[in-house]
Length: 84
Image (cartoon, rainbow, N blue to C red; front, side):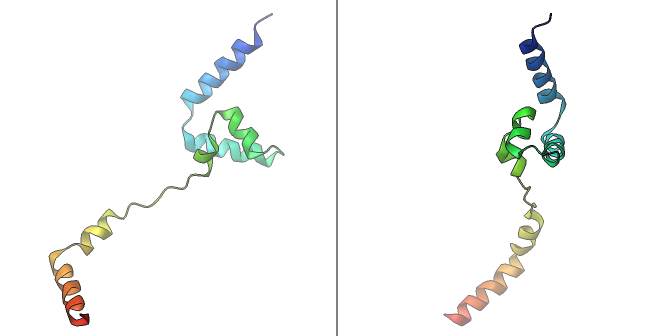
């Protein structure tokens, strides 16, 4: 009879390497819909709960670059000078 601990460890290793966090998050959501807690689903998938709840932040570099243009800064400085 095969060692079940070895099989479990092997499956966890396959899941860890084969699935990206976004895929694990989706599976964890499905598992939790079947009556399991998020904590249990994350544990099975070797996914930390912080990764499960993580929300990506939009990159606003382009917006900041537009705001830092010299003509915009000059206008902002003029407003500050008028208020002073």
